[in-house]
Length: 92
Image 1 (cartoon, rainbow, N blue to C red):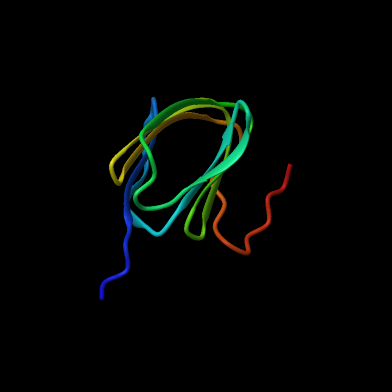
Image 2: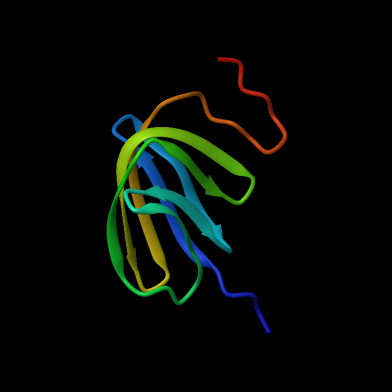
């Protein structure tokens, strides 16, 4: 049986950061950090400063908004720091 996945799009005003399938995504919502899994209920949330995680990729953001409809996740974010891959160090 195939593993359920989300269709995730993470973009900034400058361009697309990620577009593809993922098993889950984590966002820093106004009410706290939350995880989106396949079959999640529809939602729209503003995002606060923090980490957006999709698979091994992590982006530090200042703000944004995320929408979930069926298994499609779309986030428009303002980046705070450079893109970080799993296991990479961020020099600040």
